[in-house]
Length: 502
Image (cartoon, rainbow, N blue to C red; front, side, top):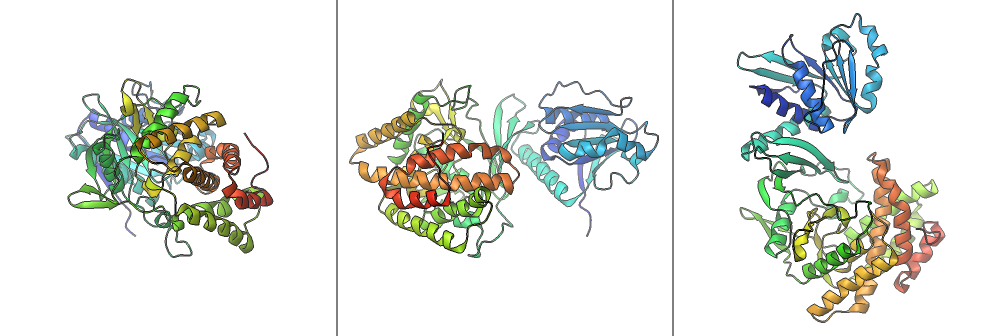
C-alpha cells in the first residue's frame, strides 16, 4: 500500500502559524510529530505555532529547547517539545522520557534523525526550502494522516469561504461524531465551525442497520442546515449559516454567544428555565411540516420518533448500564420482560400529542443572551437530531436537565410554565400531557443511563459517569406516575432503582 503523503506550501511566517493551528487541531494524545529540516528551515517556528495553538495562547513564550533538550507545557493536550540536536546517542531518549511523554500527551521532536529507529511510528513533517517559502511534506500512520487531511480540508473550506487568514481553535467535541472550532476572522469576528462528516462504517445491529439509522440520528449536516433555517424562519434564535459544504460535512455558522445557561457556579437559574419552557411552548405552537428545505432543491425529512427509535434507545440500559451495575449482561428473559414493559408504554404514547422534538433541549444547548429581548434571549444550538414525536419529550429534557440537578420545585415550575403557555394557545389535554411526560421522562433517563456508561466504557469519556446518581434520581421521580407502576416494579426487582437518590 502506498503511504499517504500530504503537502502544503507555506509562503511566509503567517502561513506557518496558521499551518501550526491546522496541525494542532488534528493532534491526539499519543501522537509524536517528528519535525525534520535543515538549520533555519523553520522547525522551531512551526513547533512554537503548534504549542501556542494547543495552549490557546498566541503570546505564549516558547523558547527553543536546544540546551534543555525538552520543554513541557500545560495545554488542551499536554505537549512536550524535544530538540535532539545535542543528543549524544539514541539510547539517551529513555532518560529524556520521550515514551512517557507520548502516552498521555503530544511530543514534538526536532532533529528526529538522531533518534535512530525510536520514532518509527511518528508523524513525519519535512520542511524544504523552495526559494519562495517552505514546502511541508507529511507522512505517517493512516489514522493520524486521516485526521490531518481532514484538518487541511477544513482550512481549504475556510479559504473558499473568504476567510483566508482565519485563526482556528478547538472548541469542543460532543458525545457524538461532531466537533466544533472557534474561528476568528481577519476582522476579529468570531464564527463557529461545525465539523460533522457523514456517518459511515458504523457497526450493524441484529436488524442489519446501524444504531444511528434505527434511532433516526442525523446522517449529515443537511439536517443542521434545515433545522437552523426553519427555526429562524419562524422567529426563533438559531444560528445563521455563512458557508456550507454539505458533502464534506462542514458549516461555518454564527456564534450565538458564550454565556452559559447555568449560573457561574453551575446551578440552574429559575427565570431562565421558565423562559425556556415558554419558548418550547411557542415552538410547539408553530407549524412544522415533515419536510424542510436545505439548499438547491435538497430537502430534509423530519423522521418520526417511532417505537423502533424509542425502543433502541431504552435498550442501551440493558446493553450497557445493567452489565455496569450488576457485573453481568442481561439474559434473554430479562431483556424480553424489559422490552415488553416498554412496548405497552409506547402504545400509550401513540395517542399523545405529536410535535417537534429537539431531543436534547437542555442547558448545554441553550445560550443565554441577557442583552436581547423575548425569545431572542435564548439561542438554540444542536438542532440536527430533531424529529416528530411526543410533545412532552422536550419538556422532560428541560425540566429534568441531565447536566445539572433540578430541584423538584423547579421541575414543577418548568412544567407549569409550559402547560400554562400551551393552554393560552388553545385547548390543551393536561392529563394526557402528564402521562406522556412521565413516560418520556422515564424513557429519556433510562436511555441516558446506558449512553453515559457507553461513553465511559466504549468511547473513553469518563466524565459522563458522574451524572448517573442524578439520572437515577430523575427516574425515581418519573416512576411516581401510576402509568409506570409495572416498569417501576421491574426496575426495583433488577436493582436499577434503590431509593430516592439525589
